[in-house]
Image (cartoon, one colour):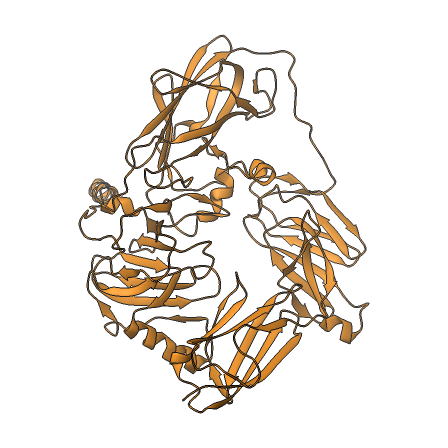
Length: 562
């Protein structure tokens, strides 16, 4: 019976691993040549890019087509993130995602606006009932835009599997013209145990690379001993765009034997923050350039690794020679090859990196707590990827919490005792993080009695700040007693330079109106096609709150032909 069960499980495993992908199921969701500004799995801040970014010629308002027939399963409208986004569930079990949209198609736009007005909120998340919003492949479902966290007009497009895991759209036959090999910007080598060394040092070393006649690269020869690993900084460029995009695959071998593969086909959102374990996080924070480590350290469960042998580590023995080879590939299999000659050589005298020790030693698999003066700290277990000496100092109401060159996987909790403030002053208090340029960033502050707390995954300097300033409101195309019949939209600009905008509410003649907010520009826009103002003389009122509760109000009367 046990043997039968093993064969059943083995068969399931083989079938699962050989998932059949239909190359002709999905079509390109734009009707212009496909040019991309972001590839699947591209390295981003704290996450992998979960789709491909399609250029829209720098314009907004292009038709976005349903990539396959299905039903609209989710719609989300938010100020940040994906902005206006639509999710379509397909009969094959996959879901496509269309993000940063300017607006939805007329039927879907009406469906969304009706519910926004009912909720009196621009931000909304909807899960339409099955069958209520169906689309056919090639239907216009929306129009491209620049909403949310987008830094320029484009369409973010995803294909997710039945478990909501993003998959590389190019697997499904989405074609991108690419005949260019990936570009290697740098190669590093790391000593990874207490006895290891490279060229008589345990410090990370950047290796010189020399182009070869066959188009490959050759690294300078190194003398090494013990457990070492390599890291690479690399990008890919497609034929029709100058963007620095991510690569698809990196493979390594030692003396002809494969020992590591990284492949961007699929990942889960639950694992995406482990990107900070993949990259040399400290180097990125200091130099704004990402090095992908070609080895897998403890507390790194990423599923993008394949065919790992010794987790990609290379163990060099004295007096033996090795050839380490790296293959960097894009999805079209354009390949850049790097050869690294290694000579095993034990050195009696080596340079060791300076170890900075403190009395605050945090274990990665245990909770860490700290208290001093008015300040308390909790770092839950699993937040740190490795045991770490923490550099913590408290000066009055300001606490220096280590350095942001160390990544945190989970939120730590910072708590300040504010019992020495009176009740009125407490209302204006918030916790802020001070960056290197002395700029203060509001950190969401939870207030409970005399204990104010915040949760964050960023080390740095935090303190208590007061915000007594109201938000600013600047009308753009509206003023008292002005006729604005020719205007299609009503525009107002809002800003708060301290704690930031929390909420806003606008009315015309006492009735709620939907104003779309672009936090990147601070612009609020109302579409007169919503027809909330049926009379000639209209009273407009806007109330804006910041994150501390400071309130600004703007009121005026305008005229418009009904």
